[in-house]
Image (cartoon, rainbow, N blue to C red; front, top):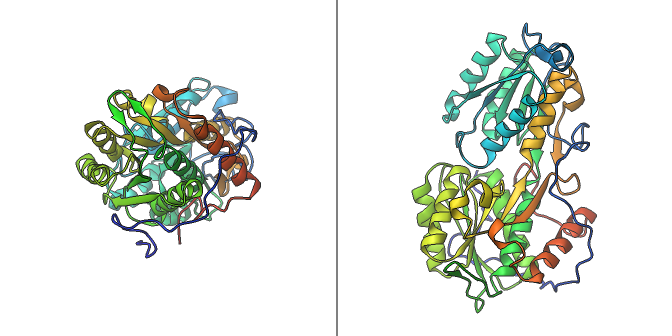
Length: 390
């Protein structure tokens, strides 16, 4: 849905009080594995399932960890598809890691048309072949609302949303918290001098950009939290905003980002899945910088590590791994229910790009640590929620 409060490309953001940099001393929230944080109803990613006793319609793989029988898992992509070097690939990575420990077979089902999700989900459940069906993205929610009822013995995992049925475990990562930190990074660096491999900032002005995929509640949360984080650092910062309309069009992403760089943006943050590559291409062409999303994209897209100063990350791979293991161990019921993972659960973070570690000014780490601690302690009110803006 459209957010009437969303600033347009040409609008400046509203000002808030300027924050001063404090000495580093806040507790570091590590971007590490979530083992031990994911098993319960309030901290871990999960999958959905019925009672965890028998996994799927007629399948016997839910006890694969104990008996050695095969646990069969299907994963259906978001509209961005696999090989996005971000959201979808992280989800698969977690399943593959689980398969190193257990006898797990993975079926990747790439479906980029949301209109086909109802039938795709139903066909997989109807087959009775799968102990778990993982659905990547809130785009699956509407279809799952019906399919979870129609196939009550099928275990489902829904990423970035939840359906209130006993066989569904929905897991949402705190996109708003990690995006706030991306805003802190961008808001700090836009007035700092940085020169790297031909790219540089213009510290004389405070201007950054945001490129989103689909203009709706979920991505609006990325945008508004990013803006708020930047304003927390610098009340005078201007944020240009643009939306692509999908998650795959790299050319449009590049055009929007190039326009923002032309207007004076030093750094552009994207929440556009596979289309985000276009933002990095524009950063290189315009000798500016960018911030990645979901994964450390300076690692997953090494051709752009010279311009990716950082990434807002969420540990989806740890979540899908834990859920797959729970299914294989016959303990799926332990991970059912709606769950949100944020900074407090070490589920999200903002990491510095590989080529910039140790190269950014101290103000970056100081501001990031202060913001992290403020969010965890409740002293910073981050706009929206993990599931979006209403």
